[in-house]
Each structure stands twice: as structure tokens, then as C-alpha cells.
Image (tube, rainbow, N blue to C red; front, side, top):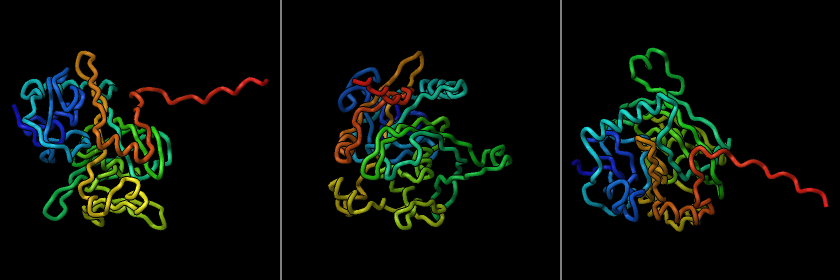
Length: 286
């Protein structure tokens, strides 16, 4: 068994343990369908993290995870790869974003690659990747579908379905949407503002820093500027399709729920695949 080193359930030797799956096993990751999975906070090693990083970075440390490793993780990897080839998308996430997308639903497409920045490497977008860079696998073409579930006070609750898998895909895609995830202290600096209008900055011009929020939003969240650096990433794995037709659903973490209530966003998430509501028919004349 591997010891959890990432947020949620990302184990060092296992490249495919989705984050926050343990929340679906029961209260505080108690025994259940997932076998009592729990995890410890932190950041998974580069290249081993799943699509996006789940919320909960400030959670209390837990014991080593009991997620399946070795052959089991290889079987899961094959299942997810096959599902994507068949047009099935096993993972559904939700996120609170700073900013509201212009469209209620849509797609985010971009090439992603690793880029050296000083002493570290970062995932950066390549909006128009060339055929040769894709063929040499220097850049991976990525796609995420999104849907706005609610908006209030300049923030939004989004449902996300990644159609491809790449480390940090979801946080980077949200910055390309000019709506970074709340608590994203790594990529949100790439979204600048002039007279309140957001625009995208190149990664080399936007060094990593604690996310900047305006005074009104800080007040609504009950945070001081000094507390911002401890604000966890509000990106959560909501549903995960399992082999043989199983479905794992993870309840929202307490801090995520608290944020929804403070911002006036809906607390009851719409299941993945549910069509958008149709307008009500007009009332008959009296």
C-alpha cells in the first residue's frame, strides 16, 4: 500500500487515485463502498496528480490511504482510458470561481505542456498547438466541458467534466475562462484586470502568488488579507464512474459548503448529464 502524499487520495506509487474520492465512503472517509478511504493534505508529485486538484488542502491529516495500488490501479487506468475512447467521461467536478463565465455552458479547449520557470516547472497553455508539437507529444490537446450551476456576487458555481487528462488541467482551463477557481494560488495570477475587465496574462509575466480578492468578496467570506494564503482550492471531485457500472458520489467538504452559503450559491448540485431546465410554459389566461 502507498502512503497518501497528495490532497485526497493521490498515492505516490499510484498515478490514478482521484482526489477526494474518500469523502464518498462516509463521514470523514469512514468505511463504505470505497473501503474507508482517507487521505492527507499536501501536493502530489509532478506527473502523478489526477485531472485537477480537489478542494480540502487545509483538512486535517489522515492515516495512510487504503486505496488499491499495483494491479488494481493499472486496471482503473485501463478502464478510464477505454471510457474516454468510447466517449464516456468518468469524472465530474465542481468548482467555485472568481468571475462568471460569459456563456452558461460550453467547452474549454487548449494545448497544455510543461514549461521551465526558474527553478520550477509549470503547466502552461498553448492555445494553438502545431501538428508537430502534438505528434512529438510536447503538447497535449485538452478539453473540458463546463456548466454554470449558479452565480452570485461576481462568483459562480461550475460543474466540470474533463474529456482529457493532464496534470492541473482544470485550474489552468478555468484561468483561460478568465474565472480562476477560488483558492487557486498557483494559476490565478495569470488573470489580470483593467477597470474591472479581466484579461489573460502570459505565464512568464504572472509569477505564482497568493490569490488576490477584492475587499467586498473578502468581507463576504469573512477573511482578512492575511488569511487568504490559507484559503483552500475550491475544486472538488463530485462523481466518479467506476468499472461495472458503479458510481461514487462525494459530498462537499465543510469549507466548500460554507463558501456556498456565504456567497449565496446553490448547495444542491445538479447530477452530471442532467439537461438544462426548460422555461416554464406561460400561465393560461383567466
